[in-house]
Structure formats: C-alpha cells, structure tokens
Image (cartoon, rainbow, N blue to C red):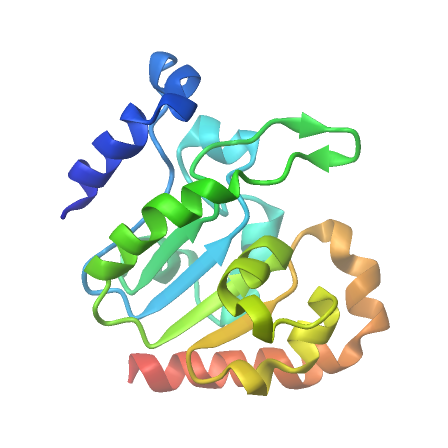
Length: 192
C-alpha cells in the first residue's frame, strides 16, 4: 500500500472530517528506502500550516542531536517521520493537546509494513514511548531514556527537543554526554 492510498484512508476517517473538509492532508513521511524512523507526538500548528514537520527550533535541536543537516533530514529519503497523530490536536490549558492514540493503532501498522529497511526507531516523548515500549516502559520519560540500552537495537527513546526542555537538559547532563553521542554513532553506522 503506498502513501497515497494510506492518505485516502486517513482522510476518509470520520474522526478526521474537519481536517479533510478544510483541505488539510495528514502530515507524515514514509520513503520506501528509509533506514531511520522518527516517531513523535503530533504536528504543531505551524508544522500543519506549512506541511513541513520539525521546521522550527525543536527541529534544529533534533537535527543537532542526530548529527545531520537540513538537506539530509528533508531530502535524503533515509528518514521516515510518523507522528502519533497526523494532525494538530489543538490547544490545551498548558500547551498542545495530546495526540489521538487511536490513529497510531489504526494507521502505524499499515505504514510500518511498507518500511522494510528501518534499522532504528527513535521514540520522541511520552506518547510514542508509551505506545511502542508498552509493558517495558518505565515510570517516566527520563527513566525510559536512562534505560535506553534495554530497548536497543530497535528503539531509542529521546526527550522532546523543544526549547521548553532546556531545564530538563540542564538537570540531566548524562543525556548529552552519553545518549546523544550513541545516537550519532548509530546513525553513522546505519548510513555507512
């Protein structure tokens, strides 16, 4: 099943009616030759408006962590990017609303079936980690990341690269000292 077919299914879903009527397409990327899969939360309003994910300060930080430039990130076809929800979920009291998890349940298996070359799946944030790590996940995102070796070679949990997580990064120096170097080394090995 190709992306156009999956897009049609997603857009025909009754839960997506308001997006489809507004002419908004689901935002994800599934190049057939991708070797690295990034699973995040959901597009922000800017990403959905631009129809371009991670094109913001969070994306800049993520590319730094990955050790790749914008050209590689957007044009190499080596990265697949699938959020837990394909649309901006809306604004809540303290930030964006959580993604609608049922969309990952319905559509991720269809997409993953087509991604036959994935060597590493990066799980960004609590929703992706809860969904994919299931009963192996720890109590918190920090605990998941500390235990990253338990999930290798398939999964690597990361904290969201949002500038709002600067305090978390300053309280967890081991993340930049151990996890990020491992991530960059692994990506170089995969791409070699």
